[in-house]
Amino acid sequence: MNRAKVANVNKKTDEVADDVFESIHTVMHLFRSEQYRVLREGRYDLTHMEGKILGFFIRHPGATLRDLVAHLRQDKGQLARLIRSLKDQELLEAQTDAGDRRSVPLHPTREGRNVHHILQRQVRKLSEVAIKGLKASERRQFVVLLNKVRSNLEGLRDTSSMLGAQIDSNAASH
Image 1 (cartoon, rainbow, N blue to C red):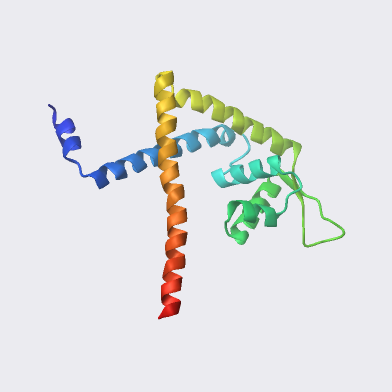
Image 2 (cartoon, rainbow, N blue to C red):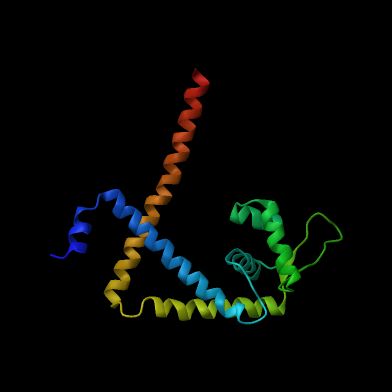
């Protein structure tokens, strides 16, 4: 048995868990980097979050900053800055509502739709490259395993909100 195998056998469970998530993080970083590289070779330098926001307005044309905040559950100021960047790059446009000047519907421009299409095409290409060499059964098993991990993490949300309510209840009774 070689040293690498012995080292892996002797690893503690928490170290293996760390390795799993470090691997997931590395794969996603490589994937996102390659996804957006195709744009950087042209005139756009979008971040992952800008691409995500552009995608939201592609799927929900006429939505507002308030809608985006509710959807992403992130800081309104940060999202407003990202929207400004997309507007400056002429990928999003605002159409003010004469009836309510506080609510500004946002729409993707033609160029915004083109950029989104490029990103989607790149995702399809990268997805195929990423799983090249995996048998169909391995691909299915990989999805099953990732779904288990996701389910565990989603269950944590429920557990932590129940735990938070319990802590609040205990604090109120003392």
